[in-house]
Image (cartoon, rainbow, N blue to C red; front, side):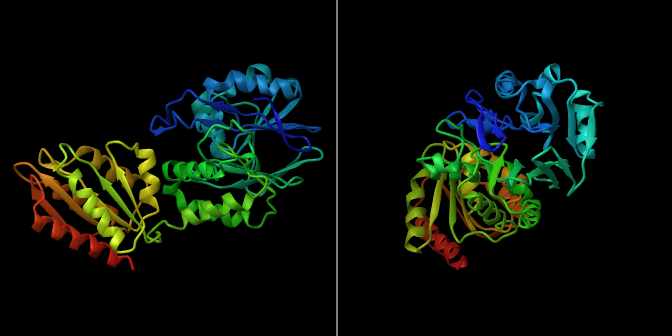
Length: 397
């Protein structure tokens, strides 16, 4: 894509990534893709804000050259050192070896350890401003959104917030880069939630602290490092991130996430019974087959649910491994303080409850009960399942 103007003298010069299958080697983006949003401010002193990963660096350099003579660049603002933001830095330094790199003290340390860069670095502090001419950059310290060195950059003349990973999302930008250009904005909002639950939710408290700092600014546009640039309704993405971050610690919507997996169908056959029981209780739910749904799509459903049904068989004296992985990832993402039940079949002996009990303790989930059955569920098992599911639903009220 060609450079796109955000406002007078400020341009999006980013690139779309349509080849990476797993973002960070973990999160599925094969269908959705992702953008690496880099920005250029042309002024008496011109500045780049963030780059891209090394693999897309050549495309980024082409976009830079299409917009400015690299010799006219004065600054590179490094909001974040993760390689999907900084990986193209060596390619940039080949065409602009004179450029001054702006970042905080932790960024200086990381530049040395990541790339061996120790020269032409200027550290900036929280609230500090640098005048470019007509434009002025103010730097906001936002540690752990989602790395310790992370900053956001606010352009004071236009009111554009370059928010780094904060307020970002998955999804390549094919039909324009702005929110008001999208015919299916719901897609990008869902991809923002998926991105949040995969990348950011473990750092919800720092997100809320950053939001408090941003609230003092007049934000006319939110320009993250991934996903849409929000120019029509910047408050929309800010509010969504504040809402999602507010779930942390137990303030979840009163919904149920039904996580299920089956080996030969015995556990799968009781899933409709559980679903109907939740419906009859009047609660919204999402039903996720964790053997068919990538973990990147399971996590957003789990994040926004106060209740969890874990429905999976015993496997070699323990919980079915794919379900174990989901619950371990829930711990990594700090999805604590939920209410849960376990339902599952076993062949010759149980054992799944050992892991369930341990993991619920780690997650601070209140385990309300369990129903285990050998082979197929009998009528008495189904009655217990219905009763336990209703108990879970009632506990959310």
